Image (cartoon, rainbow over all chains, first blue to last red; front, top):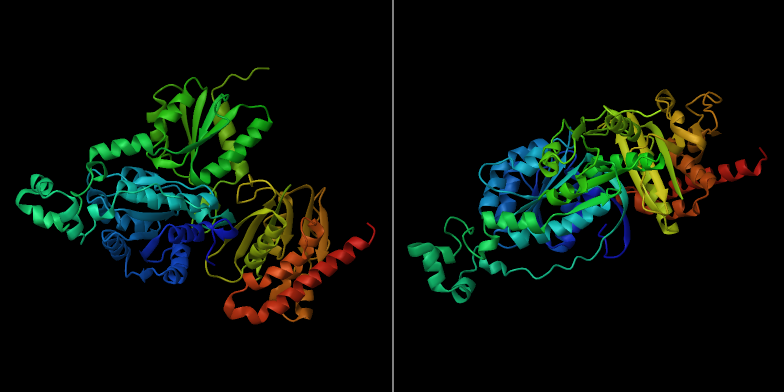
Amino acid sequence: MMAKIGEIEFMDGAEAIAEAAIQAGCRFYAGYPITPATPVQEYMSKHLPEAGGVHINAASEIEAIGMVWGAAITGHRAMTATSSTAFSLMQEYCAYIGEHAVPVVIVNVCRMPIQGDYFQATRGGGHGDYRMVVLSPASVQECADLTKLAFYLAQKWRMGVLIMADTGTAHLSETVEFKEFVEPPLPPKEEWIVGAVKWRRENQQKKDLEAMFGEHAKTAAMGLHAGAEHLGDPQTRHSKEKYERIAAEEVRFEAYGCEDADYIICAFGTGARYARAAVDQFRAEGLRVGIFRPITLWPYPTEALRKLAAGKKKVLVYELNFGQMVDDVRIAVEGRAPVVSVSDIGTQIIGFGRIHPADVVTTMLREAIQAGELVSA
Amino acid sequence: MQTSVLMSGIGGQGIQVASKLLCLAAIPAGFKAQQFSVYGGAVRGGLCECSVTVANEPITEPPVLHACDAAICMHPYAVARNVPGKVRRGGLVIVNTSLIEAGTVRPEGVRVVEIAASTIALEIGNLMTAMMVVTGAYATLIGAFDPQNLIDRVPEIIPPYRQQHVALNQKAIQAGIDFARNLTAVPA
């Protein structure tokens, strides 16, 4: 299946990510199969060549991310997909991708526990002082929409963008509409890609290069001087300023019923689907509960949550892990309301992962809401 | 309108294919659809459960159903896991009486339809079409969309290298539709 813009398709999250990547101009994919990320690669192996792209089944995850880095530095849009343990293998390269400011899209379809890689995703599993934008889809529609956004953000900021999906979204099939994503103009790739020597000689002043690189100006123009990370707009290079601007400009979240709520539940991705059902149940009972769902896990919607949380009776954090995002919630809330972690790895096995059934989530959250509260007669 | 069904049986009975076909058939009628499968890795005979929700509004039901409007029980495993007990009052349970003893599934406040689906499938020509028989019957009983949509979309759900089985599957769906229509014609 190759989906057309505007038509309603029925596919799973993994296929939606792959299809959206092709539509976003991804023309290089290297990966090593691993459940539950394999369907992304299956789709790519079939449909990327049809779009004129290249799919390579790598010999290992390390090889895959290395090839994707290599393809990206030539200016082609490139992606890999993997899952938890194998994403760990890729961390050294993720660090270099950050340091060298290379636009790469990586998909981690997390497994066991399905939200257990939050720290790794948001704090970076590799060495050095780099960040990746982390997008968290909660539906198949978001798998499609956020993948297109990921390619744009990767190139806009010249960095790695991580799509943190999981078994619950990648293996979920839903109706999905592939929308046209019109990208705002991007800076010329020639500023940083390997091989654009002539362009840089003509467009970047020789003296600028000499001022930056001294005797290495010639190799810098070739993009060979310690990689291409030093070239181009200072705001897209690996720099503190870049990360501060992203934190200010690229925050995305969804807040539902938070304004008038006594309690706010924070949840992301698959966990948010189940927490949302609990919120609807509580609302039907007259309890004023809202849900706050970060879509960007980095940058975290800190300011937005801080404003909404002020004066609430409790802020509950529901995650399918032992409690990781709760740290970011505490940083955001800064003592303006009590923060309670309501997290565990799930009781019901769903392939390579576990969830709590919706009724269990509702019970867990209800108990956390009622804990320590005076019950009026 | 939002309606959900939990399809339960064992790997190899065609539950996943049927659940996706059900979604594909609902979409031309303007519905949104959601499907999630829980199954053991690469084995026949292991537990297999598929959740399907169709709705004309954005779907709020979480993907793995703990409560549903209907259940399809293809194998005694489904009864052992109390799948019929997850059906809301006023809902529907379809029981494959070729494998589950007739009269043994009686959840309170729920309509039970018994169909010897595996037997019908064998008569049609292949045991593996039993789930198609049941899906035809389910769509007819729910009445949310024209069950002919199921027949029309069979070629899309069957892989290119197995297209020779399209007609057989369509015949099985038609048998399920006929079964349900005859059923509703009989006064309660």
